[in-house]
Length: 80
Image: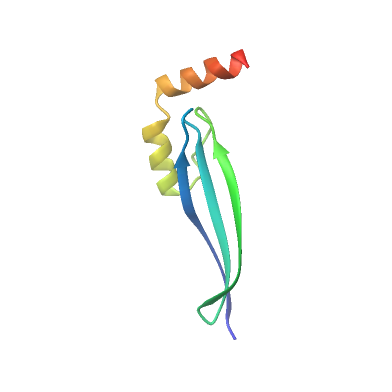
């Protein structure tokens, strides 16, 4: 019986204000079959540091978090 823990980013979503929602799946595998699984979500707002994220997440942040998107996000955040 071999147990293995596998973590992977399984969903990346860009929302209207430029924030990026990242879902990470943690699967516990026994002999190649999943016996347990959990999910964790976190959000990267425009202007957040994303240097520690998965390479795919970094690519999407780089393409999405332009200076215009960051400025618009900060303008709306200040007004709230």
